Image (tube, rainbow, N blue to C red):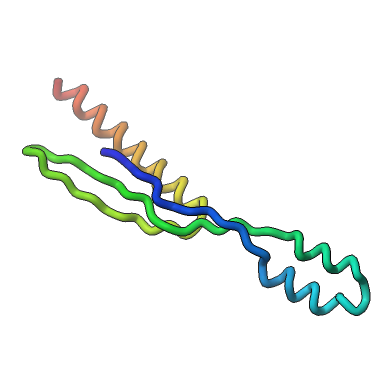
Length: 92
C-alpha cells in the first residue's frame, strides 16, 4: 500500500478581513492591518494504491479540502498498513 500526496497549499486573505477593512477604513487607518490576515487553503487529493494477490492493483484518489483531512487520510493508511503487517506476521 502506497500513498502519494497530490495536494497544494495556498494562502489567501479571508473575507472577514476584507469586510473589516471596508467597515473601519474611515475610522482608523490601522484597519489596513486586517489585510495581513492570512488563511491556508489545502486542495487536491491523496492517491492511495493497494496491491492484491496476482499483481492486481487498485488506486483511489481521496479528495482533500483541508490539512486535517490530509493528516486523517495518512493516519488511516498507516493504520491499515499496521493491520496488514500484523496479519502477515501471524500467517508466516
